[in-house]
Length: 317
Ligand code: TUI
Image 1 (spheres, helix red, strand yellow):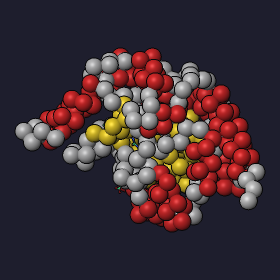
Image 2 (cartoon, rainbow, N blue to C red; image 1 turned 90 degrees about the vertical axis):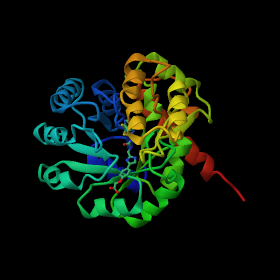
Image 3 (spheres, rainbow, N blue to C red; image 1 turned 120 degrees about the vertical axis):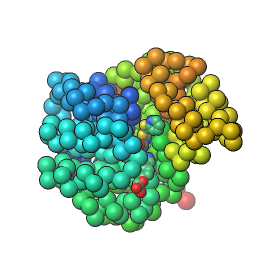
Image 4 (cartoon, rainbow, N blue to C red; image 1 turned 30 degrees about the vertical axis):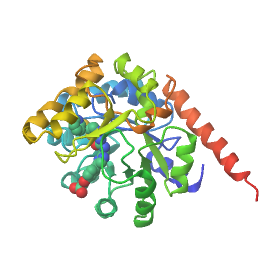
């Protein structure tokens, strides 16, 4: 590991600088404990939980591991205020945030000793988060699945690492040692992966979801929601085709479009509903070909990184 990776690991008390993304409906105690036990940073997503459901999930995780973990608070969630309180009451060590600006909560979280690591999609937001006391930022490019910003990982990452002094974690499009090395080359201290962890054995999503990820090629994802201002990347399906048709139909109102998305992620994750489900996935699904344990994924990422460094370092003129 290089100096930056070691600094990030010792800041958070983890062994490998690999975060698991806080995927709504997906990132539960089973997956997060699997990743944390394997030495990475496991994350419980609070997106689909109210305060008490989140508390129960945190307790479940603590029965499985005593290693550090994070809770991800999605700032478009209707439960954001109550889950923001629960992370303090439960003494959660690390909070990551997504899809918005967490400034309103940061003073309280910091006063409770929580390390705050926001997902950012712009240089300005990264600088603001550093000023407000973030321990690190996660710079996420539009290769990622789910709700995305407009920049690519390849361009956003070096601009953010130039702009802030705190560690930067790279997210969006990374699923193997080559992507890991590329992120380090662009100045990152670590990486976050979502899509690769979708097919982890500890990930409890419906098998139909896993099969779709395993079968996906490079052209299998599509971004919908540009008209509503909430672009979301997901695997092409009956749902995304229907959504895209309505999105660009001038007779359909914005409210009607928003309504189409409600519940579709839950139907994909819990029911594996191939007709009505929204299978949120990053473009890196095209790189994900086998089901493994979290331990195998983390070990493979570190070993593949080492191998890729060897390949690059052995270049001759
Ligand atoms: O949050 C995500 N990805 C998500 S959340 C989600 S749940 C959902 N369900 C149904 C419909 C829509 C979403 C699925 N995927 N990633 C983190 C992320 N945050 N990506 C981009 C951002 C972001 C964007 C703008 C962060 C901050 C921001 O602006 C802050 C500001 O105020 O400037």
